[in-house]
Length: 261
Image 1 (tube, rainbow, N blue to C red):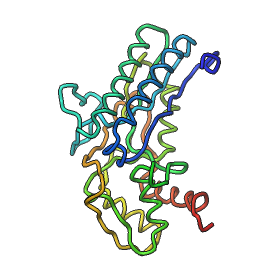
Image 2: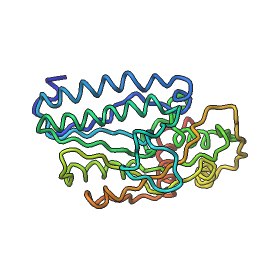
Image 3: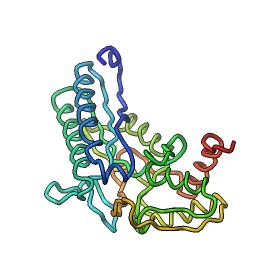
Image 4: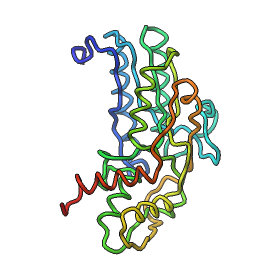
């Protein structure tokens, strides 16, 4: 690792052990140890290698469900974290605190990006590792008659197209002035899983019957992000709406994943 980081100005840390709701519910420890150790070692080595800027992809699992947009400052350590996110959320918080720590004891600038649910081309589309968007795309485009949805589909998610996350990172590199910063990065809108499925089916032009399986694991939370801090300090705002993002993702899936092509 020391050789890899030698003479590097910026580290964009997007590596992580991740998977979908099945593991979060049944095997939550999978997202804790690997990620804590990986980022602890990367941060130390980045500081010792005199990296100028370390950018970490955090997430929003530390936030409580909310009907209104959530700001970075709305997270309160005294409030209970959603039980199924307890391990992974505290891991993310630990890493964010390490970012702040290293920014204080070195010349390295650090950034934590609390991004919402990212989707688009090159996502995970297999049913074992994918998140809700990728799984729904694959289910919709491979189903013949019925489409199974885990849970009642009333959970609500803030979805951000991958291109907008990439532009966010560039804005952080170009415009962040503070030595350490946490930024929300999302669409600022939320949609229920049921409505998301309807939009994907409509764009796919498949005629499918929706069936909700209430026995399957789900994450019963609702969240949307207030990204006004990033807009104010970085000059960033999302540019790809959900309908366009779904269209682009389906087109990419059919060209690169479809088993019939």
